Length: 139
Image (tube, rainbow, N blue to C red; front, side):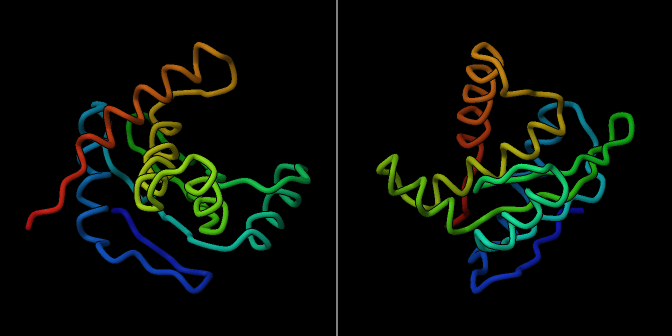
């Protein structure tokens, strides 16, 4: 089950479509969906988590805590809406597009994809693009 939680003044307009898309991404990677919680927050909230749990004194757009067991994906994914907006501005892309990239990024980490080295980062970007292309909203 994919659940969305809000610790700031933001809500997804299309929770069901986003959840269905993320479920399809998980299936496309031959994984099982467990309990995945997205927590939308601001920079201050996520910075506190970054300091407390990772000892990183930096701002970031996403922190994921992976509780995956075997092939079943489980975890908590914290997303700073402020960072996503700033990144969208920096990359000159719509907020919604950058948000999709961040949302799927967390799930891809749970699927085993890394982004620390150049090759891993290239593969992660490629996977993000592939999975973003799977998103569609019925009109």
